[in-house]
Each structure stands twice: as structure tokens, then as C-alpha cells.
Image (cartoon, rainbow, N blue to C red; front, side, top):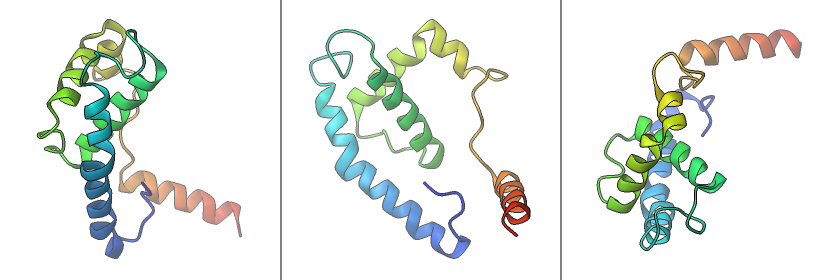
Length: 116
């Protein structure tokens, strides 16, 4: 997702993201979690961490996006309960906040000075 998308295009951009997530990607992960607690085999893998990260980012944009995906909700709950992940998700951890308008402004200023 590009935080640099012009404001006039953001609504359509976010709508497209939500639609693709709900119709194409989340059903695949929901099915993949149907018979296992993890995506690959019976133990935690990098794929699980990436799915957790993706679902958390989607929820930041679309708070109810997981409402029709109970397996992903349960997966997310299990992942958040893991000690290291739980600690990482706490306020004040090394987890970076989603980029905001101030971040975009700073990046644009730095790039404009660098590429004159």
C-alpha cells in the first residue's frame, strides 16, 4: 500500500485493497488454517509471522475485516498469546507505528532535497 497515493485516489485505492483481501486472499488463508494451527506443518514458521503482520495491518485500516474469517481470528489470537509476539505488540516496544501524514511529509521533504 502506498502512503504516497494522492488524497483524491485514496478512497478507491483502499476500497480495492479491502475487496481483494476479503475476496481473494483471506479465504485462502482461512482454508489453509482449517486443519492446522499453523500455515506450514505443525509448528510456527515465518509464514505465520507474516500472516499475523498482514492481518494486523489490514485491521488497522479495516477494523472489521476479520469478522467473517473465524479461523484467522483464532490464529491471530494464538499468535498474539505467544510470549515474544505479545511483548513485541505492547506499547513502547520496537514495533513501528503505521506511517502517518507527518511521516509522508518528512519523506517527501527529504527526497525533494536529495533529488534536486
